[in-house]
Image (cartoon, rainbow, N blue to C red; front, top):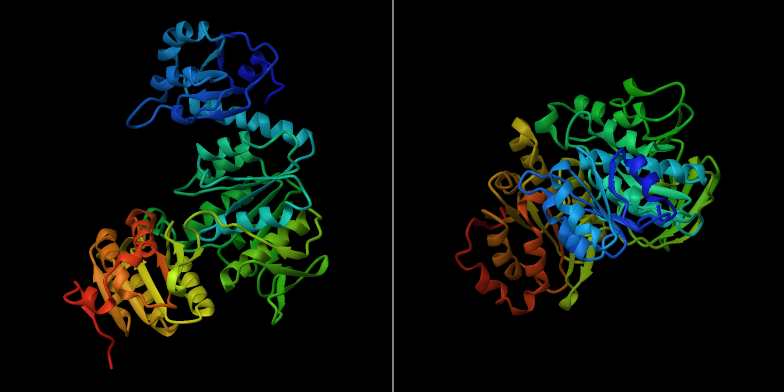
Length: 474
């Protein structure tokens, strides 16, 4: 947007240009919505929220060197006076979020005119990891911009698009879903050339009511693709079958799909069979779930006609399966950003596959599952037992169902604070510990406690009188 004039930017946003300032033909270097983090030269957008109106903080953004501000009408007069001395621009729109989305759509259009292609990824679990894998896969071959952190909502997606440099050749965007219509809204902003649905599972089951309804919400991405675009889908997923379109190219991944896992070599090389032949990749990660995500990424590369192969180093987003090695050979798998039955099983499988020593699992509640929640938690307990988990720490009332069904040493606590106080005493040198639960459980406190376990008392002392402790059954 740097080359856009103030008037062109106002037109793209559908906003009224109240004060042009001294910007002339020089547009902003980026967009920010947090006045505390505005960088000089950025456009500050004051979004009204439930607790505060961002427009009330626009003066602070101007003081920090903002290029200009985009706010709701009630702030116009005040900010015009404040901006006149700094040369900043003032734009006004009745709905600043809608204006920011329009701005993102316009920037996406310009990037398309420059030849950039957009990949949009959604799914019940693994969409962030797939985004990370795909960005790493494409980066050596295309100038790639990817969704940072969790900017995947109606607010985050426009920010991710607007952060893409003008010379980007590919945008890899993540789309979140909380209910019906959201994916459709995001797809209309992103206008993807390739749409990826990683999987369909019981995330947000409480809100949507059935797997069929979840699939329909995810399939809004398929509906949002232009004729001739590419849909990358899990092979033989019956829940998506009613939503397929004849005017799209479909590439499937996974067993019996167009892109399949041919072999895993002893040295860690993954051989993938796909339309382009066979590719050999040496990923920095392991685990069956991430190998499936890798297949989805290779399917996208096929859609973009990008050849892949060689070493693949991926830095996964925070709290999404991050592995940290600590003193005494303890490895913590920080996967506490979110959880549902599908992702919980995948994480347990990964723990079972990769732990060289004892397997410890700190499992929090899986939220938003509705009336089926108790049963689904009990099933996770059985799954943990089947996969050789040695010690289980269940966090939260619903998670107590996990411990109840688990046939082994288990401990049940009410919340993450209690879990953080107990976990250090459960661990031994050489353990691998998985920490996973829904975001609302706050299990990052447990990860912090594990990192600081050097000050914890020996295991025997810590467990004396521990709440909810249950020895393994004989």
